[in-house]
Picture 1 (cartoon, rainbow, N blue to C red):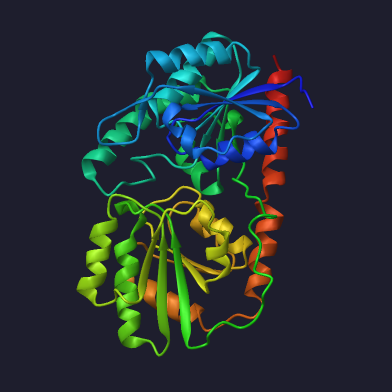
Picture 2: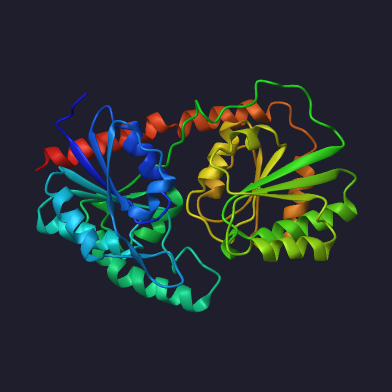
Length: 371
């Protein structure tokens, strides 16, 4: 199906951002979707037949993942934006996103900026210098991006108060990320798990902000004080993997923890565990909490970012408190017979990909019809 509406999505990272992947594929039968993304992301993308992909040579700020607007990017952007009716960027905290929104103003093309957090303001890296840079960036280039954008979308109500000093109220709205609830489904096998052993799951990057050591210390506490036996599977990779493996050895829990590395398909992990745990220090809207609950898995998470809005079946605890995390895990793993159905029903009702796509399509139509 060919559409009269052409949308350009700007992806700033090596990994295709979840929202861009979901929207470009979910709306591909309704809009002409083009994704502009770094060339070194090509090997990580399963290209959708109805989505056009354009690649640019990216340069990253040394030591971090932020992309700079190179000549290759600017050439690709100029070509693609001239053909688009609307441009959509996920996050403002990348120089390429700022460049894309400012270029859209020059060409009088409507733009949408989706925001999951404000680094240095309501999101912390755990490094004071990095957070200071983030706060300065948000107050300058971030503010300029929000001012230039036609509309700013927050992923949750948790962001509205934080965004209000930077964005005029008339162009700010909430559209949560959605997930494919037909892909993330509970296991068809409803046989009871081993009552004596509880399997915990973490999915995410092994970076400091994800708080994995807090989870490992909580597991160590449970191994000494709980009557139940716990095992933990860690799915994901990152700069701290070896350090976390050494910590497991130091704590004497290496036989209870499995590091499975990065996995493209995590559905089977959600289905085969008893409880999902997210111990982050900072988050935006954690998609993994939606995926876990859509698979019928209850969750325990730290109360950061949009976690408290998402956790319907489970519990939130303060960040960096392994005792509270251990207590929440131990109390919630006693068994809640209807938790699987309740968790999934909430996600289907509020966070389906269909609901997200419909809301964005309405916004796109409003912005392009106002021209």
